[in-house]
Every structure is written in C-alpha cells, then in structure tokens.
Amino acid sequence: MESLKKRRLFVYSIVATALLLVGAITYAIVRDDDPYKYFTGMGEQFEISPDDKQFLFSYYVDGKKGIYSANVDGSDVKQITSSDTERHNAPKYSSDGTKILFLSENSGRVNSLYVANADGSQQKPLTSNNVHVSEAVFSSTGETIYYIGEPAENLKKSEGEMTEGSYLYSININGENSEKLTSKDYFYMNSLSISADGKTLYYSLFDGHKDKVTSFSLENSEEKQASITDVLPKDSYNYQLSPNEDKLAYTAVSEESQDTSLFKYELFVMDIEQRQPKRLTHFNSSVDSPRFFNDANQIAFLEHTNWPTDPAKNDLYVLDLGTEDIHPVELGLSKQVSSHWFIAGINKLVNGYTIAALYIIMMGLLITYLQQYHSKRKSYMPAIASLFLTVLVFIISIIGVVMVDPWLGIGLGMLAIALLGCTAIVFGYALVLNFVIKRN
Image (cartoon, rainbow, N blue to C red; front, side, top):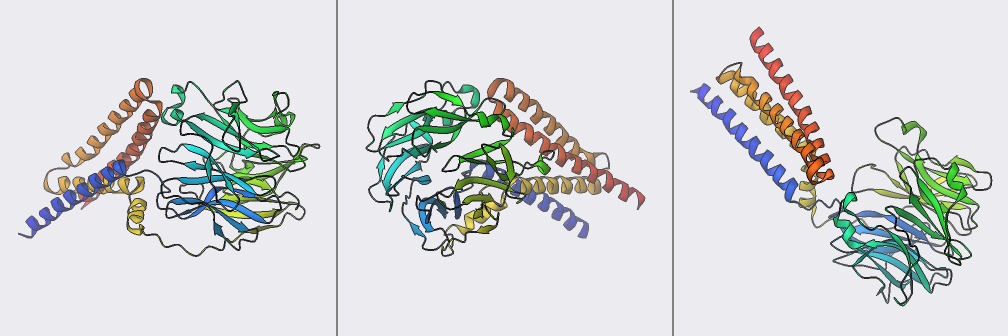
C-alpha cells in the first residue's frame, strides 16, 4: 500500500510540474513583453537648463512615463507632463529656457514630436504618427526644431525589409514648413546636437564598422564627416560636444571588458585640439547620456546600474571636470508603491531560468519514476526525447533564418542552445541515478 502511495505521489508531482511548466510557457508567450509596464524609476534621457540650475528628465511611475524637472541638487522635483496612454521622453530646452520639446511614444512605440512651455503647459504636437522621431533639438533662436525621423512602418519591419531609413528634418515651432534636409537616408542616425552659433548640426552615423561624428551645415546643406572621427575608438557612442566645442564626451567599451562576453561602457572626454582621450569613470557597468553643463566645468551622465538587464535602473551623476570628483544626484521623489505589485511579481518570477528549472525538474521526476517502477533502460527515455526536441528546434531555427525571419531563427537557435544545456543536465542525472542505484 505504501509503495502504491509513493508511486501516486510521483505521478502527481510529475503532472503538477508539467502543468506549472505549461502554464509558465503559456504566460511567457501571451503576456505583454514590455519590461517597463510596471516600472518606477529614472528614464534614459535628461537635459540641463541653459542657466545650469535645473535638470529636465523622463521618469516612470508604475509604467507611466512623464517629464519632470528638478534643481541640480535633486531638490524641488516637479512633474510637468503626463499621459495615461503615451510615454514622454527625450526632453530638450530651448536656448532661452522658456520652451521645451519632448517625444511622446504611443502604444505602437512610435514617437511624435511635441513642443510646450517650460512648465509643461500649452503642449502642441508637431509631427504625425506616420513619422517616428528619434531625436530633436531647438535652433539657436528657438523658432525652428531639427529632428531625426523615419517612416513609422519601419518599427514593424526587420532590418532586411526596410526600404527607407532616417532623414534629418526641420519644422517651425508652430508645426508648419516641414522640410527634409538630407537627401540620403541612413539606417542608423543619432546623437543629434547643434553648435553654439546655431549654424551646424552634429550627429552620429554608422557606416557598417563604427559610428562617425558627422556635421551638417545649415547655411549650405553640406554634410561631412568630422575629422575627430578618425581618432575615436571603434566601439564609441553617445557623442556630446561641449558648449564651446573644444571637448567631445562619449561612452566607449572599457579596455578590461573588450575580451569578455559582456561589454562594459565608461565615460571618456577628448580634447579636440590635442586629440587625447581621457577616461573619467570606472563603474564597471554602462554609462550613458553624457551632458555638459553650459557654464560650469562639469558634466552629468547616467549609469545603468543593472546592466545589461531591463528595465534599466538609471542613476544620475555629476562629475567635476577639474577635480574629476563624482557625486550622485539624489532626486527628491517620494517612494512610489506600485498598484500592480502582484502582476509585477509574477512577471519577475516567470522567466527563462524558471522555465528551465521546471523543465529539468519534470524530466528528473520522469527519469526517477521510470527507473524505480519500470527499468534502467526506460529511465533514459526522457533524456533521449529531450535530445530529439533540441535537434528539432535547431533544424526549425535554420529553416526560420533562411526562409521566414532571421530574428525568429536566431530566437529559436537560442532556445535550442538552452534546451541542449537542460538535456545535458538531464542525461547527467540519469547516469548518476543509475550508477548510484546499481552500487546499492
């Protein structure tokens, strides 16, 4: 009788684990894969006011993202834009500090360009949902806005399906006289900024090998590569010119992480005349979004503290370029309690590691059951089935790369690798179990 109870317990455990596994896989497939859906924390962009007294930044509260302002010491935090249906990001000040622009991301992840007063009032959309805007800056007069845009439909296409890339545009502050400034479209275009005299735009272009700092003359529409590009490292990003254009800040892969499986990004600054780079941080994580102060000899930046996972937890820092002292900016925000804590907890619990653990446990229980109540030979059947499944997924991944969607194929290939690891553990368990039973 006790043996029968034990056997039933095995069966119930196998069924329960199988149901948990199926449930976890189903939930992982059907759930919204947005890692920021219930996130609270600093966004990925910020700006410094023309008088160096305030930060303008994006911030999430329970998945809702708005634009906030704060003093440079982190005090007097105010929310100046909000939306229940869209996320506001990438804020910029006009040169006189009276206006701001920002991007508003809809549910299809298309960014539209908005302009508003510095306090967030009188918000006005400047672009439609047909164009995805990635970055924008004010002209020196504040009457014109320059932005990088691409067809919104690109967001639904894979790299090989795109027929048109990004262009540089201008539009006046009233949303009129939109003009395409560049005749050639680019697959990758970012780090948009404007010179202090308002005559030149700067941005980064990827040529297939490295990012290149490029200038565009607003006087004669001449586009050319900046000479400093030649001395920048290959893996450098997030270029930012100082207000007097004598320094260039950027992030680059740290020397100690270049030969590792995970690149770490640190902050560097280069004297443009001497062309000598200087490393400013040793965070061993990922530094992003460097911004020079306008008058103070300082630079602010973000650290992605949980790099490379999402949602990104960003901390804001200010670095003195004279002393190289770094201090964090503690934003004076009250602690937010999520109203979706249960769903957020489930989302954290259901991940690849959990699914792999359930798969291994289920296979281990099957192996043990077959070994005890059938035969040694049959105990290897779950491991063999797992190997066949791995091979099948790998074959499908190759077909997917060639005939369907390369990204789908790559995803299935990664799944096959994960299954191979689980299969190795399952085979190992079967071998050890049979060896121990045989000795006893």
